[in-house]
Image 1 (tube, protein in one colour):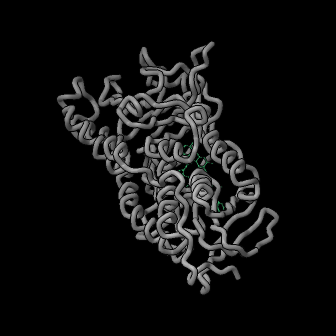
Image 2 (image 1 turned 180 degrees about the horizontal axis):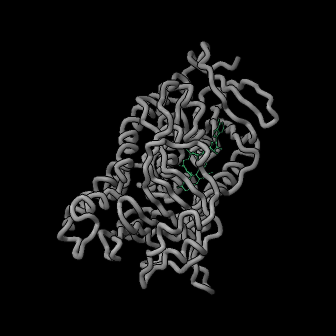
Image 3 (image 1 turned 90 degrees about the vertical axis):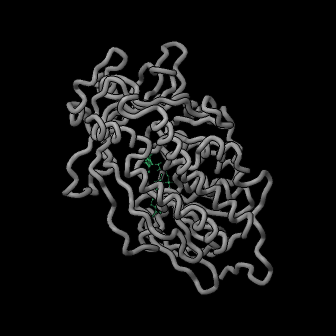
Length: 438
Ligand SMILES: Cc1cc2nc3c(=O)[nH]c(=O)nc-3n(C[C@H](O)[C@H](O)[C@H](O)COP(=O)(O)OP(=O)(O)OC[C@H]3O[C@@H](n4cnc5c(N)ncnc54)[C@H](O)[C@@H]3O)c2cc1C
């Protein structure tokens, strides 16, 4: 097969947001996705206001987003004594022009998938098609090497290749053959959902515990009007000795609650019963918290990396999925300016690779949960009055620094122009450098 479409490797949130963006600006594309069936996999994911803004610009409505999640009202860190370390309003309540959403990752993924198929037609996604590598051709086109579910292979030619194939990206492996193995700092996460009554504001993101052992939980559905129960997403996390390194076999494994609940047996307060929350879960997945060392560039000729393939990061800042959506929009904006060209990929790379690589490193330092590390350093995690451990102004400054680095500081976002103005189209290629299809 040969044509001038942009080839996207991977139909996750990043790949689909890219395809929707390219369709919006008039760029033909095709998505090759390794799995045979698109299914709503995963549990809770946060969409920061910068990503929600981009989804709105892609034509998604509040009703669409309410169908897959709910607006977040608060972000709170609570110590093991049950006292607040820090809390702040989020989304519209914090003055953003766009809400923050706590969503079901699988349902969000299907929302993007269904919208893309509706807008661009079913042929825009080819399932059971794994990209195994690429060739930058001398005529300025790019070849994607494909392996299909039946074991057969082919090479498909396109104008550009976007590697949105996740943390185990084959495109990145070819672009950076000397990259180190996956990085694991010793934290293990058990993730699940439980039908429960939401606490605090009714839509609070709560981090509870210490820098080495904590629970994070937040509702990802509006409460049932009859029962008042929401689907509450939770992540139980323990940091252990990582000297043996990360074992690939333990990624995304379903486990029983009994295999880890003992770490949280005593976590019971009058406002929360953690063991009960864990034991009532439908199913639980075990994930080591992993990322990748940043690379100096996300571009190789007509090929660029996007989403987790570019910047797999610890979920401490709840921004991996959001950043994948923002990547897609920045890439689209570059094509509006430079057309479907290497220059567009270079502009995208120049804008994002440096700052987002720094964010990856910042998330290793626990991202916004770094406040827990400071509390631990100063008082061993035990306090009566948090103001005596870390004053309110210092807490606020710490959080403001994180939000600015992650691109969702309130004023910065509210005052920023649209990434892609309404009605913008990709710039056509100049006549003498028009892309040829072999
Ligand atoms: C199954 C799954 C469940 C997840 N659950 C959660 C969750 O509950 N909470 C959370 O915060 N984050 C979760 N994530 C991660 C989160 O979705 C991503 O960090 C974020 O959305 C960035 O998306 P991405 O599209 O860059 O990468 P991914 O979401 O990893 O998507 C990559 C896609 O590429 C496909 N793919 C991989 N290799 C190839 C290849 N060689 N050729 C073609 N296709 C390929 C994969 O099947 C996948 O669909 C999950 C990811 C996955 C894949």
